[in-house]
Image 1: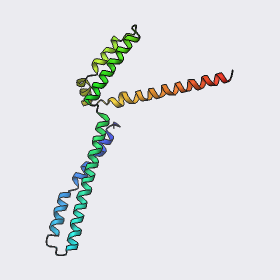
Image 2: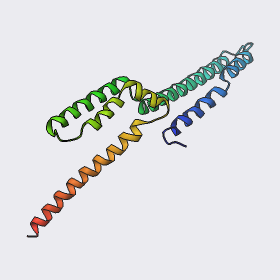
Image 3: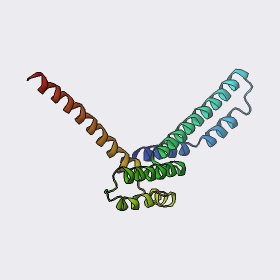
Image 4: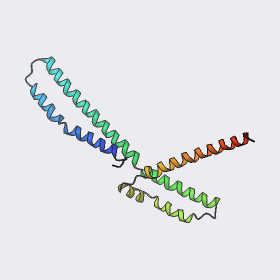
Length: 163
């Protein structure tokens, strides 16, 4: 199974389990069973149990809803984020054109056209996860580049000491 969908499947199972519990039926049965109860202490304990059960299940439902929201936010790129990304890529391409006029930036202009709300939202609806497909590899690439820079400096310092 897709790793990105695994938490959603787990939450769906928890939500299904919560729905199947039949809390409403259980509460109605408890209320009926104590309808003729004369002992106030026992009656109060029964109602406390009912209220506590309802609060517990409400808390579980809220927890599942918040987990769903968190997972969706982790995967989905908002319209505002897409517009920001488009503007950033546009500025970057303009800078590359100014700094290095010989660079064939025209081929990269196509990428700028692909970064539109309509295109990216459509791809997300089809299941494409930009953060996993692009963000995670870019993060690894940057981490490796930084590590390599640090290693080069250590090697240069080591070779200077050996002279």
